[in-house]
Length: 389
Image (cartoon, rainbow, N blue to C red):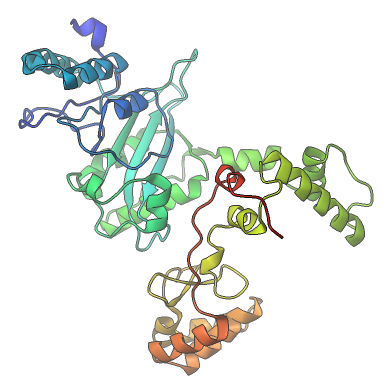
């Protein structure tokens, strides 16, 4: 097999039970579990990954589809083909690392242990170098990192990555220089709802006590924001899309109520939710609703049964803890235009300084934390039985 026929712009690695050569480049993907995942990486896919399968005799996080197919044959073959596979591995790992295109465009996404940037950590970073041309996918690279905190059940339900998958991976700090250099070289950054990804990466550098990445001079393109701007989400636009026509007397209460009902009926049909129970529909609207304390996201129950902030600089911190450490912040909230229950809880936290006392009061007043609703997509909700009401 010649170098001309197998070299790829994407770095890869064939890892066997035997110790790998010391001069082998850093693996493209840590914790990869099979040839199918190698093909996904080669195709530049940025999709959520399912939970990892049981480990095979070796893992194949390579970029070249032909190598991945060859490895599937090797799994079922005799040991005599090991030399052939070693030759393939040498060719693939000798290929140059991916580089930015002429526009300097980098598409990236992170997976994390959760959504709290103060506590949670990046466990996977995927970058794609350009958008691809002539129907061919752009090269990409993926890192996985071993975190110092546990992966939350909600996050694992989304990305399917477990702590076991990351056991042999490096820490983020081990790759920080390479990641910082890559972002420094980029001119255009692309990502879906990119603010979250940027915040989580910056939090990693802050944790390392290193200067943050300078995103100030970059051109930021967020398809999520582009969609919002190019397809507005007003009631009038929704009526046009889901009912098929505009409606008169928009913004009179009576017209808006009637239009909202028609839009919802249209949405239920479009999203496969027609005839389903309202609980299923509500889960699609907001899967985190079960954790709210009161009628808004501002304060939430955490896994330990504490009332914690769901917003702002103290997101994730318990209310009774902040009552001891920064009572002035709670008093400031009480004077601002927040929902009434937020002020009520702040006042109670200041009066009940002991955590157990405040928790008991909050459970009695607001009913205690409900069982968390599973993350439900429209497709999953559509599979539920019809409404009985």
